[in-house]
Image (cartoon, rainbow, N blue to C red; front, side, top):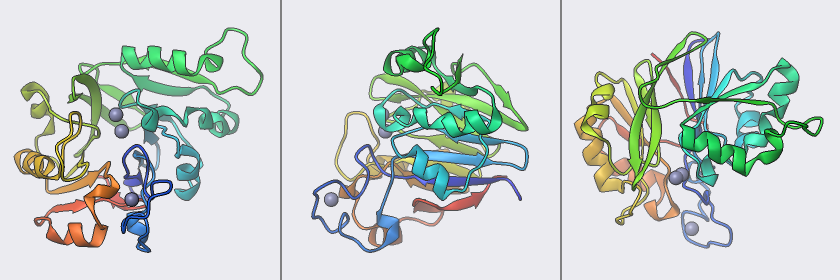
Length: 257
Ligand SMILES: [Zn+2]
Ligand SMILES: [Zn+2]
Ligand SMILES: [Zn+2]
């Protein structure tokens, strides 16, 4: 097996279809229009890392047939990125070890608040086993055979993390990026970045802004994620994008160089 990246989910916080919605995207029969909440899986023969454990984490791990997990990188504390943390339990039991979770200090504290039973001194037997590691934009990490460079981006006003791993960078829920952090995105083969829909949004790039950002970053290939149903049909929108820029879709697997 070669090193790969799997898009576990590419939808915004409600997922697509949206419950009860009758729009053409939510009713589409193209499987690429079904989007679970955003998460990514990075696998080398030695190391398996997930970025985020949203509400769909369990089904995402099943779909990817991912039978081992060495670490979780958390981008930020919003529910669509952390709500599935409980489902690291099968890895705890299979690997008989705590799951290392890397996140900013603020996010670590939020995880302690949101999942108090995981961090209790006297834990319920069978509760998840999580080992929190506080990181920031200055911490370069070694996880197995992968080097991870945190990239600080702004989600509206909230500083959150994206991650560069080899020649791939994963930036979700971004609105802006400081110039100094932009320097971490040089010479990318693969840029993965959020593009919500066509309208202006206070904390997410819309399609136009994401296209401008992709052009500035200059990666060989850019994939858009965190789409809402208002983006439109995958087939229609993807066909209109410039060469080297595409909408990602759930289950897409590409090589990690
Ligand atoms: Zn999100
Ligand atoms: Zn809809
Ligand atoms: Zn968010």
